[in-house]
Image (spheres, rainbow, N blue to C red):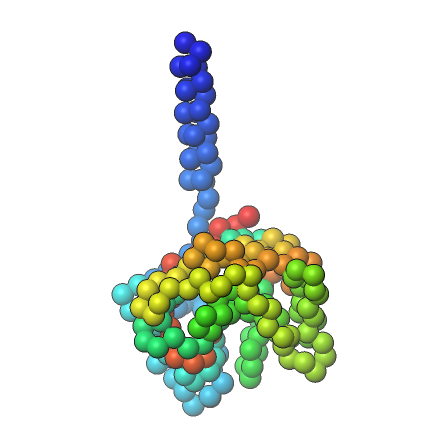
Length: 219
């Protein structure tokens, strides 16, 4: 009977954990159908955003040229962001902007950029005066006239998959802290960030890139 009671206790604990996990509510900031809740910015004013940012078969397809970005209309703070991406052709450059402070029509937004440049996923860049974070033994802060900080390198070797295969970014933001995983590998952590909320944006910079399953779980 004692063994049975222990087994029941373990089983009950497992059910409680499963119930807790099931209560996590995902907010899909990309619904797989359209881009109605996003705003687009292209640095070439003659370009057609509909030709650069498209949705096909549940996937957001970004041309990579001309340069620009697509940004959520809503502001978010304290969340775990899940982003899946892949390079349909040769891997080039892109990024995920976190805590973006609004639209910048002529340049990258004030934000923390989680890099997607080939082999650099997991690197961080702090864009805009006053944007910064404590990472490792160093404090990074973008000063007046800088535009953006130096690149903060990832902790491990590249954990990206080859072109054509899907990758997963998991970026947890709480207060001024941030944790960045690429395909389950912890690649960066930071604390004491000067930005703790803002919009989320995806970059057009280089070549074609695709995104799917873009959602967050509020913490």
